[in-house]
Amino acid sequence: MLLAADNLQITDKTIEQALKKMDPGPVQEMVVTCEKAGADIIDINTGPLGRDAEKKMAFFVEAVQDVTDLPVFIDTANPSAMEAGLKASRKKAIINSFSLEPAKLETILPLAKKYNTDIIGYLLYPDSHVPPDSTERLNIAVELLECALQAGIEKEQLILDPIIVPVTWQDGKAQALEILQVLRLLPEVMGFDIRTAAALSNLTSGGNIYEKKLFLERAYLPMLAVSGLDILLVNMLHTATIKLAKTCKMFSDEKVFSWEEI
Amino acid sequence: MLLAADNLQITDKTIEQALKKMDPGPVQEMVVTCEKAGADIIDINTGPLGRDAEKKMAFFVEAVQDVTDLPVFIDTANPSAMEAGLKASRKKAIINSFSLEPAKLETILPLAKKYNTDIIGYLLYPDSHVPPDSTERLNIAVELLECALQAGIEKEQLILDPIIVPVTWQDGKAQALEILQVLRLLPEVMGFDIRTAAALSNLTSGGNIYEKKLFLERAYLPMLAVSGLDILLVNMLHTATIKLAKTCKMFSDEKVFSWEEI
Image 1: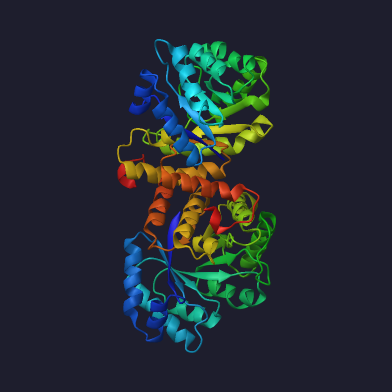
Image 2: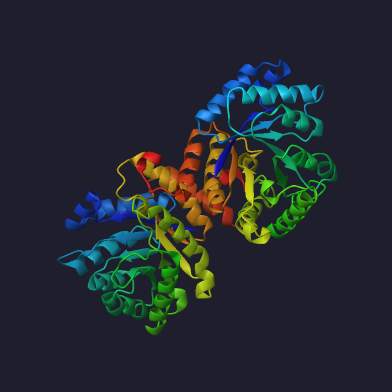
């Protein structure tokens, strides 16, 4: 399981300000912190970006890649910002994300072919609603793969995100278990060991009790790990959660256990 | 997932002394603490007990049942101490444990029939060695069920323990994953939803770094929970671990999530 830092979010005030002023400092400081904490990937979540979207995205990607060689997820729904990010990228960039939404199939998916990058597909309905169970998500997974293949993308370029939902939803707990089921069944349904990604913080959105949120995340994280999740989007500043994630990773690596590892 | 307190162990100095002096105080204090912490079951782990084994076991079981209505596991390899414990028991007692070891099949297993109690079966070879993988454990599970049925015990009385081993063993990490596989496959292999139990602390025996042990336990616990474990033997004084266990339980109960639960 790889760890993708979700710390570069436009909803973070420091990042928002840095982007407004085109000041790379705070962005780079966060990237360095995340890499030190053990991030394997940096998620660049800019949102739609508004005016000068292309320029802002290019600035952001360059700022990140000036201080790290880690792969980046470019995380925006704005296709021209996405393309600007891919153009600016000198290292490995991954598109985050497309779905069955017609606009995304038309404008985002072809960029994976054009720039020969990996791409994350969300297991959502074409109208962006969340499916109620694992069966529906698996059907969508098959459709996403078909769309990707039709767009000339190799199956190995596709990464699927089953979309964790807030546990506070009416069916939130059942959904959390359905998502684990999806992770377990995907390789068999898809016929190959397709990669998966998921954002841990989605589970606790809306919760306002910090310590309880962390407890909930720490219960769910090893369940995701053991169900076969390949990439966890996670806040790299949550020290105990990250330590837990690394301990989970340890179970699946080849080495003999040693206490130094954790 | 139910929580069975593993705190009443003869290897604990306070408990050892209490038993020596036949002083119920420290035993009962621990039982009350464990029940307050959320224990569903109390494991009474006396070891073989030596001289006056029957008397000591009866004293121990009575001391526990004087302060709690919780079911108890009677955890000894000494058949006459086991029988004394079952006789002394006025509430629900469960035999912990038998295995394919010939002496246990002959002397412990029939007690489950005689006293109409549930009984835990260890997934071990007849010579008490640990099987190397899930396939071997599942074969042993089938054999244990056959032995139990031949002894006139109902299949619903049987609880299986896959035997967690120290992660520091040469194949410790692989074994930890094999055990999760056993938990997932048992219902299908056995043809009914057979109950399972496992002792979390086995994973970290031999580790001398307390904080690291707890981290390792907290990574593995949700994996056990999501793999379908029914009864977790656990130290009820490990507050954060117990909170995590309760958070894991929350995913599988029927209620809508609320932040008050964790």
